[in-house]
Image 1 (cartoon, rainbow, N blue to C red):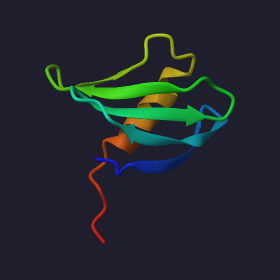
Image 2: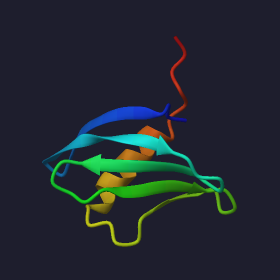
Image 3: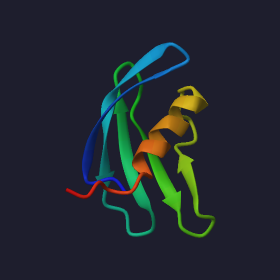
Image 4: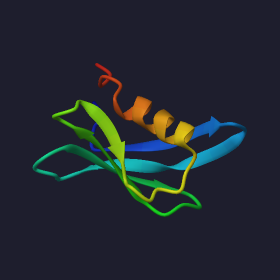
Length: 80
């Protein structure tokens, strides 16, 4: 899983997304705050019961961009 902070920069459907995500304290889920240039911040979390990633209800971003962020968050941590 992702460390505490990571920068984000990726392209989805020709649109460039830049920003960062950081892990936030949550006693119930693995939760990340996502901040992208030009968008309201939102959260993404792993629901432990369903083992599915979820995003804030009113997030106004392309679902493919959310999938890209989740794929980056859910990658195993790199070993140095």
